[in-house]
Image 1 (spheres, rainbow, N blue to C red):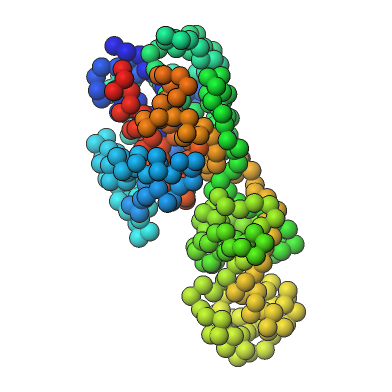
Image 2 (image 1 turned 120 degrees about the horizontal axis):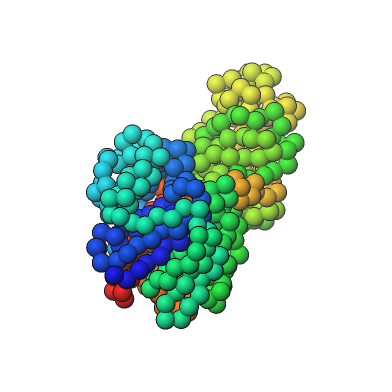
Length: 382
């Protein structure tokens, strides 16, 4: 049997192990640096397990090769992911926005499905096994705290740099660089945005539905509609996560707190009463008081703040607060099956690649899509 080493026990690593082990002709080992598999997967979707999205195509992804992402999704997209997960058990259903969850709404149960399947398939799982070095020409030799192993192929699924509490410390990039791979600039994505704390003082904890427009100078570079949450010194929520992939320090967010109300209708509503009471049943009371105070009672200024509240972006809350890494190993340095063009037998899957998706199940879909793509490539070559 050919020995296949999978470096990283996250979603892509576990999925790739299942795909290969089901073939019955490989000895598959998963090397996880942490104490257990699937720690990050167990936290996805606010702990509810948003595994994919039925509204699926390459336009929801950022990459150096969108066409390659599209071809991979065409081979293994949302429908295939749901079917694959259901072969291990459970029921997976979409919500009104297309986000697919397990019927029990527990991400940890999805991880348990994988762990159970890996055990059934006799996959060799090594935890606490951080890979220090990968060497070799004809075969690969892995070095880790527990010893050394010789294998025919290696799949790097070690993740990126986001959420380091899950063990994603960028080690995969270092291992790839040893084979001559480059790493694009890595930045936090799906992350809270920082702003001048004086702009959001007193608003912490207020959650609203809003339109967000991101401007770089006079040019609009991104738009999102959805959940906006004011936090200490910044902005969070689903809409902010989606727009954060485009945001840079110095950009300006313009917030529309009445996305379904025209400027004319808003003007009529706030003109009907004097004082801060003009915003009763128009916006959240706490937000209304803050806006009225900032406008100093000027109704024209108040209307502008309701429809175009400006928030200069001063940065992000960093990898520790990010859901995913933007950047990584360029797809241009891989073939159609995500095998390295620099070293035969070296493959990449998941977040380590320069592919990041929108909020709503897209990054887990890429984990499963890339895992399937790699497994198909290994089956052709080994």
